[in-house]
Length: 567
Image 1: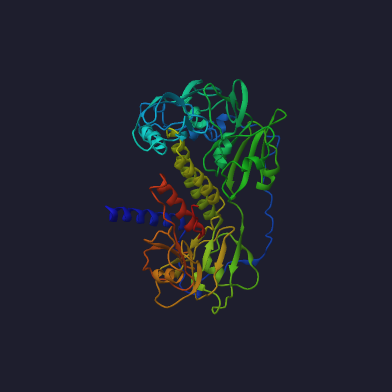
Image 2 (image 1 turned 120 degrees about the vertical axis):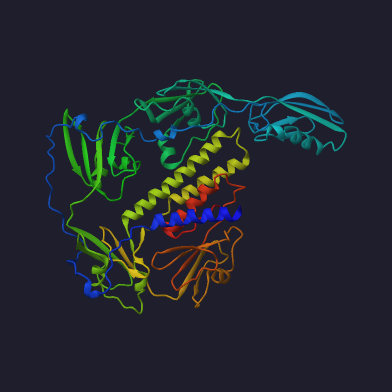
């Protein structure tokens, strides 16, 4: 069984690595004589393109019948209320129920110590027994209640005491969910449930009129907190509060919205605050392709429809209005592209080349010194691949974030262990979001350089020749070590002090100078210029979502050659 599981995990990692590297061509030139020299012009600042025929602002507003996006897209964040979520919570008769403040506990003790009373769990999660003191019950399972109280009494009265306890009633709260929701009403949950749980019970926010950004929590008719779902969707932030019986969650009317189509993660309707109506505010929320340079803005100004074409920088400064429609697409008509050189190459580092230029054709015009340049390690850093890796990582982080929040919401009272796990996950996700993928592309197949098409913004990397091997990640002393012929990853890790106690010791990732990623065991061969990444292990006994965490760790390692730790 263990061997089968390891084989499945290995296959998952190989598929992940293959999916992130990609972008290989089958065209191959085997000699300089076969290369066709492209038009190559060193030009750090390429010539501006001629103006295209831009639509006039006098144009008639396009009707809905002529638009390709015939149906209004779903609001940004609507997927939060798709699928199932735990329904009404467990009651006090359930042995798995976990105690929360406000629960009533009957305690009966006889013998050397006597008590017969009902105690209410206070806001700190304790009950107070005379002559015994406070007993911490917050998060304790109903099945473990008697033993917890008996142990506390036994520390004072060590013998001749019998204890019986009974959880008289759990303490669900009834919260009103009203305003612009699908099913306004009164819904039950626990004080520790997030507002998202109650909104989900109410069917979610009304997709036509409800606001994702103006949500107010009322207590006794007075505002207690304002809640912006975009803070959770973009940054993972939720209001830190316990709901009480009779609280109200009020969803306001939807504010100004802008439709976004084209090269985005999905067509969506983005709600803007009145004080944040610029294109920059929209770009902070929408997932726009890094190559989307051709932007069309459609809308109505002073009663007249218009269509305008913008650059990304122009959009950042542009004021947007309710009902505007933005279409993002990649520029397809440029005659020249800009290509950059990085590493052990002399002279100019930026070149303007004709669209359609190929890698080997380009490199035939780049002089290098083979004594200091590792020509076998040439690879690309491609903006498009970087963006794909960033999106893939973000999707993994969103899944991890959702699973963490739902696990926290659906548990019957948060134990200290789960609260600590959620805190670790939030810190881990925050750190992961700061990682920038490199967008590396392997351009060799069976050792031969591929004559692939270059793209605008490509960075051609010519790494330095070196006899050093980097060992990083979960080793005692991350080091740059001298290469020895025939050495394996196991030997290099031993020279770096061996594994830490947090290390995954069943395999490593090896990053070659050519950007090739090798997933192997400890006996994998190592060569000059390699980097050995020792990954952390994720304890399934501690983390419920260990597989999601592992996927994120490997996304980051493959995309950025960084080993991120869970602290």
